[in-house]
Image (cartoon, rainbow, N blue to C red; front, side, top):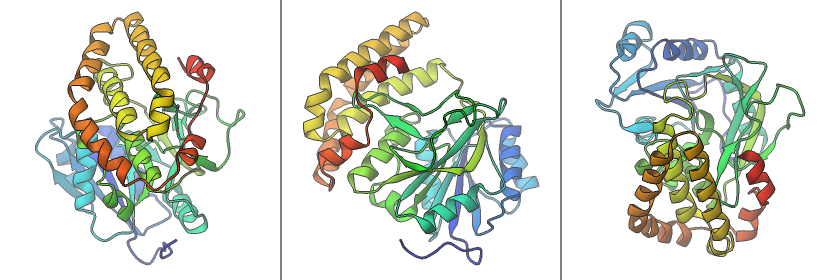
Length: 329
């Protein structure tokens, strides 16, 4: 590990990407005001909000650095913009405006960063409206290319998994080393949003970085509070970006080994969307994924050429088996 994080210097930049989050953003910032760890500063990237939430920051939170993008850049590009303004801090904490951090959220992250050999971190997310239920305990990546939030909807404390390695954090509330983010180029801005955190984690892992779940770091998350769960918007980006992530990041041997399962997962996903009345959205997502294939394959060459992790190690942190995929569906 590099230098320890302390209260004596600003070691963490908390980046929040805002788009019409309204009072959720105010509640998010109020929760950060109560953090027991004080060695941080806040950057809010406003993606062209029209609800007055950006103006409210200027009047109520003068200590926050506000960056006005002027348009909706998306989650990926918005965070990259914030990263470029983060200065020389060692760590970057990402936080959604609909995620409300417990007072010791950052302190628990700091403790894990100081005391473990992991490189990036996810936290315990509860559902904001029903905090007796979990929103997630880190993200799972299945060898088929499907990803989901572990323990979503489970009752808090019921067979809950403790601290340990996870494939990826949900970027709604996560901690990364700044130099690591810069080394892999940050988020892929073509994703706009959804699956961008899985793609980022995949590329970090291919560089030998490892991710840990920190159960003591807690946020209450509205969960799709801005984009909407199963909305056409989230369905389109999730299904398109799922394909791009598999094609770009999966190591060569695993790529061919699990390609049939990836194709099955896509067909299953289209079927589920059809059942929800979103067949057209799903088909458009897959079409656009294929349209973007030449660019993704060019990026794949770079990603795989710079990988330094054996395929066995990558396979070991992915979920396997068709039953897990079917149960998820």
